[in-house]
Image 1 (tube, rainbow, N blue to C red):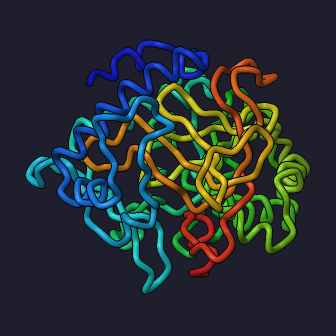
Image 2: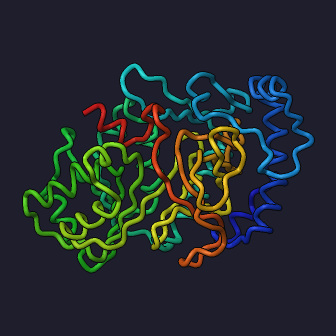
Image 3: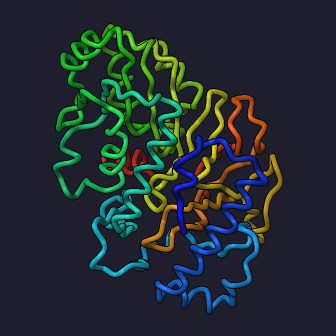
Length: 359
């Protein structure tokens, strides 16, 4: 199983036929690998009667409910080869997912993230403002999906500034000085959605801080639950950012710790895109059959990256709708879709939502 082919091509360059052929072959082999190397995965497949040798297309692949990673330690590589364990976000007392990474899987995650995000930021690293506190990397209790996200995106920054102090207050003077210092350079801003809204843009607006970020790019991700509760839509979020600091280039992304690296970036037309490393299938909730374009359902995510653990085919707890494939106005090939939110009664799990619940 060699992924080098995908790293050698642009991340949105495979059409439906070519991508389907590659993913079916690769994910079929990956399914057999996990069947042979993860005892719990084998037991589940046998229990449900899946014959991993007779799967012809990736739409036929068995999927694991993402919540299983909160219940079991699932890995397909010897524990001696595990170099990193990442946990999902969770409120106090809530179970968290544990994802076990070997060197190969961790490296491929980083390479995939770099390929995807570079198409939005360019290949040149730029000054970066991280809308979070540096303490998130020092406190091992906080170093979960949130810390991993910051570290992952930090590779795109040269000079880095943490915009918030340990009490989540805005480092106003440092932020203003940083923006002025690099006013002739594109600045990359990264943060989790609720934190960008609550601790950055609201502070700038309420305190009438004058900054010009019209040449900057913001990438943000994480849950929207708290913002929806405050009646802040995606359009309103963008409007507030533009009014506060003039920022126009804003990209949301969809991803999860259980498939780190396989993120779905928002294009200029507001759609999430599946890169060559991954895909989505929208399934009807009553029988898990495949929904048609424009039909709401539960999101299944597939990724070629998880080799050290059986996370290559997951049923999420999110609802979405497929908008099309290979014909987005932005010009990117692959499926494009919209996120509609959490399934009713599904537990909170996004970095932003978890943070909002804690504070």
